[in-house]
Image 1 (tube, rainbow, N blue to C red):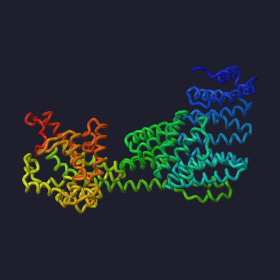
Image 2 (cartoon, rainbow, N blue to C red; image 1 turned 30 degrees about the vertical axis):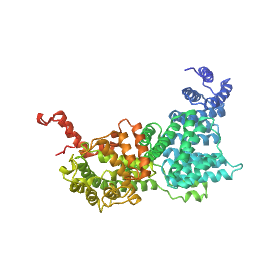
Image 3 (cartoon, rainbow, N blue to C red; image 1 turned 90 degrees about the horizontal axis):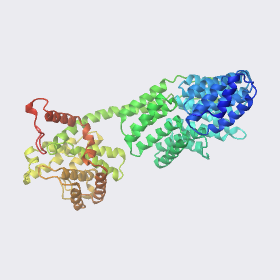
Image 4 (cartoon, helix red, strand yellow; image 1 turned 180 degrees about the vertical axis):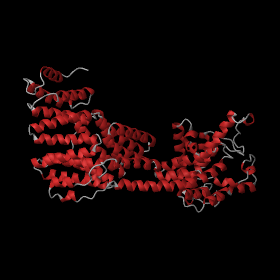
Length: 634
C-alpha cells in the first residue's frame, strides 16, 4: 500500500522536529485539510489508513502553534473513523484535541470535541460517559449562545436516550432541538430534520406508527443525493426509520422501494454501520414479503455482528429480529429475543433523570417535566408474547393429541402417515393463492390435517378392502365425516373449530350429490371446498388399497373433469394452476408438501422404529422389510 504524499510530508517534518512551530508545518497542515476533504469522500482501506496515520502524527506535535489547523485535521480523522467503525483509535485523537483546544481557549472546539467524545463513548456502549460528554458540550454551547452547537448536542442526547430505550426522553430532546433550530435566523433546517429522524424511531418504539411516519417523512423531505460517506450514513439512518414506520402501517411496496435505495447507497459508500442497518431492514422486508427463512437468517447474522462489532446497531437489530419471529408466528423465539432486548437495555446504566439537562436550560419546563417511559412498550410486548406462548402451549398439546389420532387413522391407508400433512399444506397454499391472510392460511393448514380423523372408528376390513365396497360398507365409510366432526366438536381452539367444519363437509359436492348432508354450492364452507380438492388430489397421486396411484397430470385432468360437479369451479381453476406451478418448482413435491410431518413426534418415533427394523439392531428376527402401503400397522 503506497503512502499518501501528504502523510509522507508530515512524517518527514516529524523526523526533524516534533515542535508544532516548525518551519513549513503550517503549509503541510493546510494541504492535509484539503486532502482530508478528498479522502473522506471515498470508503476504502487506504482512506482509513490515511486518517489513522494523520491522527497518530498530529498527536506527536508539541506546543500550541497551528492549533486551528491541527484541531480541524483531528476532527476530520475522528469523524471518519467513527463513521467507519474504527472509533477506538479516535478516542486518543479526540482527547488530544480537547487538551489543545483548552490550552488555547478555543471554546467552540472544546464543545465540538466533547460532542465527538460523547458519540465515541455511545458507539462503545458506555452511555454514562457519553451523557457526561454531551452535558459538558451543552454547557459550553449555551455559554457561547451557539444555536448550531446546541442543536447538535440535543440531537445526540436524543440518540443516546433512544439507544437506552428511554423513548419519551428522546422525543423531548428532539423537540428541544427543533424548537432551537426553527427559531434561529436563518432556520437550521438540517438540524430539525435530524431531530425528526430520532423522534421517528422513538415514536415507532412507542407504537405511535402514524406519528413515526410523519416525523420520518419530515426527516427526508427535500434531501439531496448524498455525495460523501457521512451524508450517506445520515440518509441511511433516516430511510431506516421511514421503512420501519411504513412496515408497521402495512405499506410494503414503498418500504421495499426505500430499502432498494438504501442498498444502492451502501453500495456506493460501504461502511460497517451502514451495511448492518441496511441488512436489518432488508431481513425484515424479506420476512414480510414471504421469504421468512431468508429474512430470519439475515437478521440473525445482523444481530451477531452488531453484538460483537457494531453495538450502536444491536438494539435495532434485536427489535427487528423479535418482530420477524412474531410475524412468522414463532412466538416462543419472539419472546426469547424480546427478553434479550430488555436485558440489553437494562444493562445500560445512565442517569434517567433530566435534572442536569434542565439546569443547562434554565426554565425549560418541557424537558424537566418529562415522565420516563422506561421501556414500557417493550415490556408490554413481552407480556403479550408470554401470554401467547402459554396459550399456544396449551393449544399445541391438545392439537398434538388430535393430530396423533388423525395420523393413526391415516396410517392404515397411507403407510407414510403424511397424507394429512400434505393435504394441510396444499390447502393452505391454495388459500393463500386466493387471498387469505397468513393467520387464516396457517389455521387451515392445521385444521386440514384432521379432516379424516373420523376414520379412526372404521374397521380395517372395510377401510382396507381392495374390492368394490358393499352399500352397507359404503355407508360405514361415509359416516367418518360425522364421526370426525363429533370428535372435534365443542373445542375452544379456533383451528379445531375450523377442523370440525372441514371434517363434516369435505365430502360434500358442489352439485349437491355428496355426503353427509347433500349440501350444495357456496353453502359448503369454503375451507371444506379447499380441502376437498387437496384431499382428492393427494389420494389419487398416492393411491389407496382400492385404487392405484396415478401421475400428477392425470390426477389434475380428472379433477378438471369434475369442475362444477364435485368441486367449486373457481377454486378448481386456482388449484390446477397452483399444483402445476408447484410441480415445476419442486423436484420432490411430496417432500415439499409433507415438510411439517418431519416435526411430528409420532412420525419421528415411527421412523426410528422403521430404521431399527431395517438395520436389524434388536435381533435378526426383527430384520424384516417395511410392510407395503395399505398394510395395517399393529
